[in-house]
Image 1 (cartoon, protein in one colour):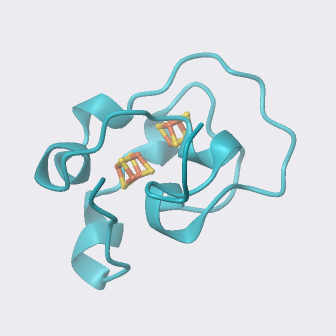
Image 2 (cartoon, rainbow, N blue to C red):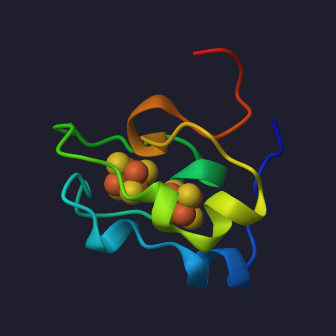
Image 3 (cartoon, rainbow, N blue to C red):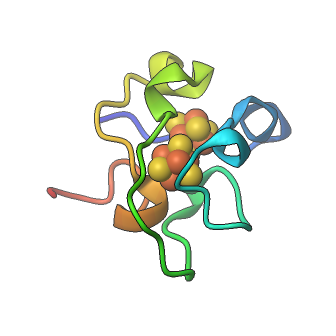
Length: 73
Ligand code: SF4
Ligand code: SF4
């Protein structure tokens, strides 16, 4: 699986702040890894994100499960 680079452009594409599960802080979890906040899974809008398509992501919930490409889930 492709991993996502941490750049100003990819950060600007991240739509996590508009997600019902957003933990209240953080961004670009697909690159930076999971949040240290407790998160209730209320849906993940990563599939609507341009980074999701551009980097051929397939999972979502990176704020809970960790960065894309960190290994099998
Ligand atoms: S795929 Fe998800 S975590 Fe990654 S930049 Fe997009 S919205 Fe943020
Ligand atoms: S990684 Fe997915 S579930 Fe977590 S805040 Fe971003 S869009 Fe929501």
